[in-house]
Amino acid sequence: MNEDRIIELEIKAAYQEDLLQELNKIVSRQQQQIDRLEATCRMLNERIKSLSAEGSGGESVEEVPPHY
Image 1 (cartoon, rainbow, N blue to C red):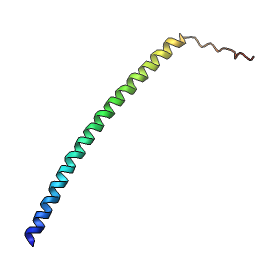
Image 2 (image 1 turned 30 degrees about the vertical axis):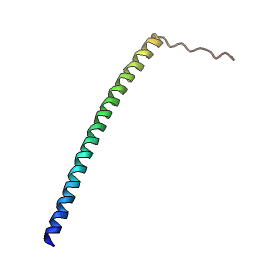
Image 3 (image 1 turned 60 degrees about the horizontal axis):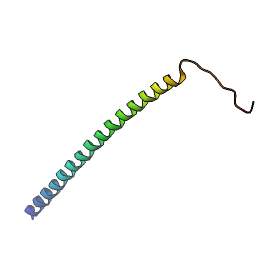
Image 4 (image 1 turned 30 degrees about the horizontal axis):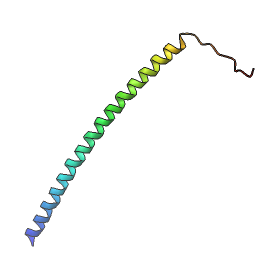
């Protein structure tokens, strides 16, 4: 009876170890994806800044809407 309990605990420990390894893989992939997304956001932010700097040309001209 005591041996059955030890075997059951060993089986549970093996399942938990497999689950832990799988979760570590998932977390690692998610971190890589987060890193890529952050890099993309930085790139897009720089692009927006450069486009707005090119587009404004240092002048702030407000056009009158056509219906006025």
